[in-house]
Image 1 (tube, helix red, strand yellow):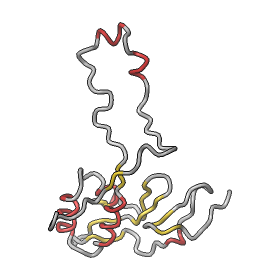
Image 2 (cartoon, helix red, strand yellow):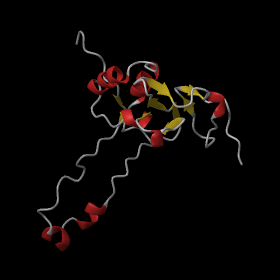
Image 3 (cartoon, rainbow, N blue to C red):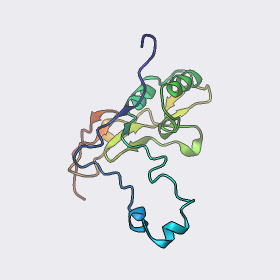
Length: 157
């Protein structure tokens, strides 16, 4: 593996306690019925295209470390180290309408929003946004901003 860089995503333990994927159960109730037997040719895999257990935290940290660099170089390196390109655009806005000061991944992880400026450089949407500006939405989770726990504590409204 010399010369090959690590992927920018990782598999997480999806068999851990409390991890639910909510795949639905409609097929379970239709199995063996006349409706299913009539549409036998239409039915494919029950979980086709579903991919659980991927964590893109390494990608988000990589993108944050590349702020101020040429977007074409950053994008080509990130795309070569990913399984698909969609997660890049969760964080990077390509138009004015998509810009957000921060993004939320999952229930409790916040990251700076990024965009490509007119000089084709990766930039922060709100460079003045700090950890102290964000508030947790619940008391039970550890909320983070760019991987660091939020300074403010949850306050009931």
